[in-house]
Length: 274
Image (cartoon, rainbow, N blue to C red):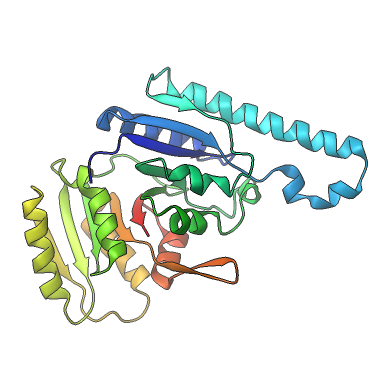
């Protein structure tokens, strides 16, 4: 993948949003990219539909509340963009949050946050927002954890390899980081893990990523997601790269077990692609 030039940044009212803005600004400078910050949340009326049966005054109050929330996001974006000419604000789509995945089609990279159920603003988004975004847009997403440091990011990268289109797309999206003198670790599970890793090593060498430590994870038993996070901690990774696996069932996006575990328990940034 070429260095990302168009980055879509998801904005909401969560406590971690300012950190996402600041990281997006740093990536814009590092990659000579443009960042579009876009607010995307459920409206108050969507979260509390019973208000439609109440007085018109209640509906007006909710609309004012939404405007105030949008104004806070804009103020935060303005402050943490720090006057960068690479940072651009755009208004939410009329069908937010579902329109966000459509808008992501026009970005090389999407930056979003891990869902924090303890955050008072968690209800601003539907529970399957992140899953829907990853699966429907098909664009690589950098998912940032709701706790812990975000910098440095990309100095030590753990690549979760699997011979699948999803993992290959995630690898391609990660190349701009892998080429920046990163310490790269690659792990693969299964009977043919060793052979797969050797082929991966040859591919990375052709991409000017020569120094790669290979980790044969052995049989894929138990929760591979927990094993992957444990390996990330063991090697001191500050970025995890992996494929995102999921499918649709009865209008609901269902994530694979490993993907679900990572998104629930991650403590480091994760670059993933469906």
